[in-house]
Length: 630
Image (cartoon, rainbow, N blue to C red; front, side, top):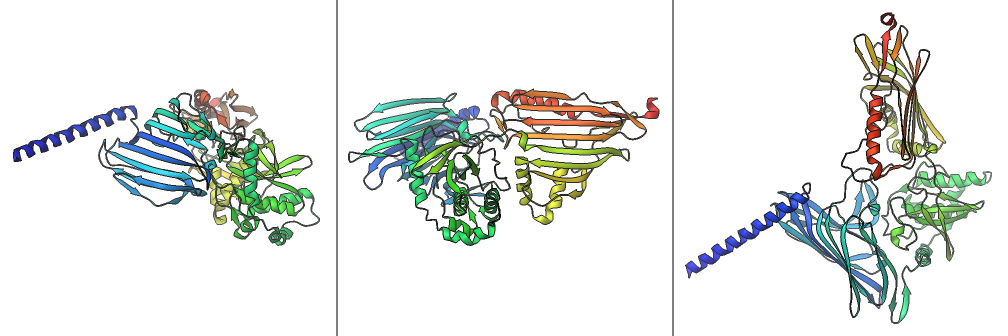
């Protein structure tokens, strides 16, 4: 009997060892496919089931089952599940090697996302090839809050299946987005109660962490869920069949806000005066909200479509985009202007209103109708002037409140010209190895707003230090003094100046002095990794101009001046010129990114242009003593 037990134990140990070896071999195979990954999701199964309930109407459940495989020893990672206040968890269970964290409100880059919450587990898997898992079940009492299902995640996925169980009473379109280039198959099966639609994906790489790339809605595969309507007790109930339904739902939320505008009278009397023109009154109200209401939160598109009341935002002195738009609108209306709330999706979203959905919107502003045109006021854009629009909302469709109906407009698009960022320097060679001179900086529109937001985040007693750093472009061999600047404001052009002493732009060899006059060399650090896959996005259309007037010292002459270069494409334009005028050498650099984007099919041309631009920056003016050249 003991011998039999021993044999069985040996067989069990051998079987476990064989199983472990197979698991290790499997992990090694995965590692060759995803060599840079420490963990992958080997299986991801998501089942979304729609159900009609008498209390809530159309509801949905979302079941998530994940299996992780460690591709390194002592692998540690976090897996989050994001949700809004309108979604409840029926289950959240993590497997071996995990520590479950309680619910937290989601923050990123120090920004508090007011309506988005996250439930997450911290996994630590000690052995290569070992597995763990996670199961979750979410309940949606309002299916409007289920507009998108993503395939790609921050962790690579070997196999993912997304299945929809749809009753025959539900009219919904499942629209594939960005499927091209991905291995995704779709099957549909009719059942007695409706239909089952299954999406099966293989070998999904992890979401890229490339800097300044487009938002994932433009790149990664996902399913856009267009819920139109459903039948309950024989009656048709609309969800978002048309944009009219979407607007009606928005408008109902706004109607429940409970604005008490009498609370606005005292502060409004402080903001505007009877002798001001209408333009002055509008600007004063808009700027007051910008300056006095702190922008606290940013909704990521699927949650929080009801503004806080104007009196709550006023009393708290903070609000999100909706609350700030509501306060701006109510102040303007109380002052006698035709102001409305307006919804839009920023540049971050790849959608418009052609398919009605909560995914279309992630922002709210105030729209003012005046003199037969619309003026859009986004109080979250601190220091932007009235009539100027940030890149993120330019050319975006906007849904404007209009009683029981709506108005669909487009935020105007500007060119790169208004964003001029200009540097003017008068430099000379002193002490044989030092360049000195004055610099003047002029910033307009978005370059101005960007700089002022930067400066407003610095304590005022450290402004001079911040300005010196800015003028030296972070180069510790550039000393800045005599900084002159006005206070924060909204002048069309913001100007400041200083004195530069530069010690790293001069070298001498064989009686020749080599002078590199540009201390900034803008865009020289913008060469991209050769393996970069995705487009390069700038936060606004770039228009940078540098003019340097370099005075050749007495007793010296310029024996060589660089040729300069002009590199032009429809997506970028770099122009560097050197000209002589007596003892003065004029250097001119102009750089433009007219659409704030370098598309993925232009990355090679971009890198080639940056290489040539840097080569030009590194070409010196060569000086010699006039006694040597005679």
